[in-house]
Amino acid sequence: MKRLVLLFAVALILFPVSACESIIEESEQIEFFGENFVDQSVKNKYQVSTLCKDWVFVSTQSEEWEDGKLVRIKDVNNVFPYREFSFKDNGSFRAKGMSDEWGQGQWKYRYNHIFINGGYFYDVAEVTTDRLILREESYNVGGPIHWFGQDPSGSHLFYRYIYKRK
Figure 1 (cartoon, helix red, strand yellow):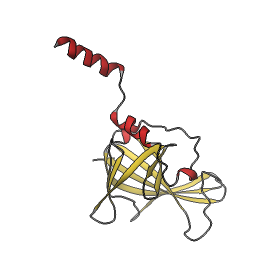
Figure 2 (cartoon, helix red, strand yellow):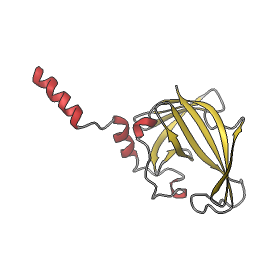
Figure 3 (spheres, rainbow, N blue to C red):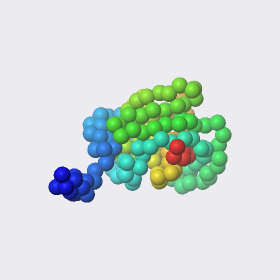
């Protein structure tokens, strides 16, 4: 019995791969909307396991950019994608949006972006054990789409969604 416990302990030390990371890496084979709009040379800045938590909305800020330079950050009211959400280690996603109903789907973290099936993707600006900041570029509906990642010239507006760990 002692040998079995010792063997198990050694295995845990030698193979510290979290379940979240291994399952999410497998989901990288699925292509989500938005992957073609981001810079695919960007490496993930954070561990996937730090994202696998329950998050609650705190506030929103806007970032205004002009010709690739940050001009202003200010607080914004009544703009948020989800009031609560959870990234699960099996690649599933649960979110409570504008309604009280929970929506479900799949997610993955790639190119330092979170991609959610259904057409949503967010730049991961910051993540710690207790705080998450997602960025989303806003663009004019019906007009030409001029993505910052493809060309930072001109005017660009981002929303920064700030969450705390539930």
